[in-house]
Image (cartoon, rainbow, N blue to C red):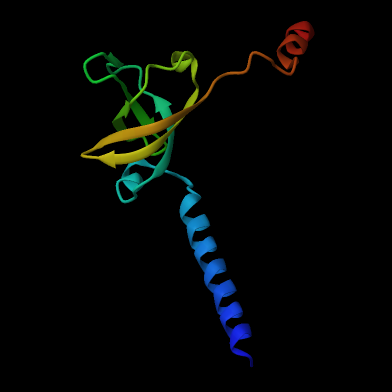
Length: 129
């Protein structure tokens, strides 16, 4: 084999391996707070615990609240931005960040809010009654 061919094949294999490794690290599945403690970047799905205190601190410029994950574990979440507009209406939250000392520090937050549209089945059921 020619040396240029060997170097080319080795380069392609190395580049592909590096690409796949980085792609695998960037994909994050949903985890619980306990699993997030073992990772550097996690997506935790849960619901807002409205029985606990929440609010925006002007001193730290952070919004904090308590969230219950899919296993029922409640943890404090700190978000470095003001409270999102639909926060109270959200039926599900996804916080993206990392756990530090039993507090989840979120870099980003996604909210699933109830749809203002429905499929019309409520109206149909009301008419049949």
